[in-house]
Every structure is written in C-alpha cells, then in structure tokens.
Image (cartoon, rainbow, N blue to C red):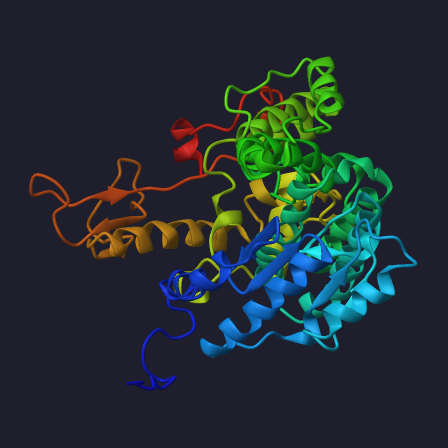
Length: 454
C-alpha cells in the first residue's frame, strides 16, 4: 500500500538533516551504477566510463530516480568527451542524448566540476571571470555603509568566494591573473573606504589583523600554500579513490613550492595539511620583511596595530544595536591611522599649530574638538561592558575625588567586590605623539603616570 507524503511535512529546506536524508534516499540508486567513475555530491552526479557502461547505467538510473520523485535536469546536464576520437564522438553523443535529450556538449578546457575548472587551460578563463565579478560588485558595495561594505567584502565576498579555487588548482602558475585580482581588491577597497593606498600601506593592509593589517588577504600570497595544504590533506583519499585504476603514483606539483619555501628560509610546519599553519609562517615573514622599509611613524603604526586586541574592531560584526557600527568618516580615519596613510590636507589647528597630512596633531592637542567625544566614546564602551556583565553604572559620580580634585570617569551603582563599588578612570596614550615616536620599537602600553596631566 502506497502512502503519499506531502511536501509540507518532514524535512524542509535548510534543515541540517536534509543532506543526510537525501543521500540515504538515493543511496541504492547510486550504488547500482557500474561505470568505473561514479562520483556524487548530493544531487550533483558525475559518471565516467565507456559509452556502453554509461548508457546501461542511465537506462537504470533515470527510472530509479523517477520512482523516488526525482527528475534529471537536462538543462544543466553536460556530456564531456575525454578520449573518444572526434570523428566517432557524434555517434556517442547521439546515444547519450537518447537518455538525456537536450544535454549540452562541453569541451574539456571549459568543463567545470563543483565550481572548479577541470583543466589548467580553463583556469585562466575562470580566474578572469572571477575578477570581472568582483569588479562589478564595487558599485553595489558603494550603496552600503562603509563599515558594512568593508566587513562583507572582507569576510563574505572576496576571499571566501576565491579560496575554493585557490585550494583546488595551482593558481599561482598564473601570476598575471592573480595580479589583476589583487588590483580589483585594492581598487574596490579604496572606493569603499575613500582612501588612497600607497605601496607600504597596501602591503600592511594585506596582513592579517593580528599582524597589523586589516585582513584583506592577497590571492598572490595565499595561492601557493592554499593549494599545497589542500594537496597534503586530500592525498590519501585521492590515492584510495584511484587504487582500483592502478594509479598508485600521483604527479603533483609540490617540488617547486617546497623549493621556493625553503629558499626563503621559511620553516615547514609540522602539520602540512593545515593552511593556517602555513599562513602564520608566511604572515610573520611578511611582517618582518616590511619593518626595515618603515620610518619611525610607520613603524609605530605597524607595531601598535599588531598589538593584542588593537584590531578587534575590524573583526567585530558592524551593528548599531551593539555600538560597533562605525560611520563612514570614523572608519576612514581609523583605517588610515592604522596603516599610516594620509588622513587630510594640511591645515592650521585652533591652538596655533599645524595639522599635517597624517592628521596626528589633533589626537594629542588639548584644544582639539574631538578630544571630549573620543573620551566619552571610551567611557561608553566601558559602561556598555559593565552593563552587559550585570553592573549598572553612572558617569562622573558626585562626591568622589580621585586625589587631584577631579572626578573619576564612572562608578558601578552595585557592589563589584567585597561589598565595594567599582570606579574607573579611562585614558588612552597617543601612540603617534612626538614623545612616543622615539619609542616606536615598542608597542603602545598603558601610561597611567600621564593621567593627572590630562
């Protein structure tokens, strides 16, 4: 007795058990295939072999799938000729078309499998297509707030969509295309941030946030070890898949990469299949290579940016409800100060001094219009953190004296420890002040002895 299961019952789209249950449902039909090459990724199937084995499998597979309520989508089906003579292939194509009428014939150089080209000859065109897609996205990103656009560009669009290709194929063999991809990354970022990168600033920007950059990873930097770590991880599985075909030796392009790596005096990680381990070594090498080219100001920028948690704001999800969404101008200035880029045109300050193109003078000027708002923003962050931890608080409570006739910045209204309330007084040292630049070989550190002179 048959019972119909309506589509509104059972597993729905997006259910984490959906792929597992789908794979179980088609398992019997998949295992009935006799062709030597039988590879499935859920509903994406690839069958390879002689024309006799393929036609026999299709004659069984299509009715089996139809009994499960599934139909072969001929609009996206492809027929690929790898080793049949061109003169004989029209007859082969006609036989297969008898089962999947309307399937298109694809050249091996144009074949794409699970989003990745199957041949090195198709890689260059695939990367060029990616580059065009990224360039076309720039106008859409400019419609968003700069912070949201930068966060999306960095964490969801650019490298996340490119990394799969970098891991699957030796993209480093096409440095010209990777250079164009990096130019797309740079030009889009400049448009989103309203910033002009110089050579040193762009080199620093490409570093991970923990190394003083802003996390815009270059495809030229990632391509070699992304591909090599992928090869190291999949080598055993590929060998097992090819075992029935007596393909026991895999010719993989690893020797050139290892030679380049060792010639650069870089350590080979113990776990060669982890891309992060390779990237950590490469980022540290890039960081140390960049330092000799920096002046005192850029050295201070790099070291302070690489200090722990100094770049946490770049990784925070930009949302106004938590106070982590920066306006366009704040983001522009923040990135420019982090990378040592030009912030503004030279102009006089109200104190009589001069503000240069780096815009550093107002950070320590007592008459700067932004001095009080910056101090208030720091205290607002502290207040939000205490509130989130369950300690309501007030700013500049009356009746308290920190010892110099001035009020502390804030106090909790409930006891913090041992029945006593917590008071705080916040300050932030100027990493780029003239007195601090002479110590630019050291990262910024707390300077409570300067607090009374605030």
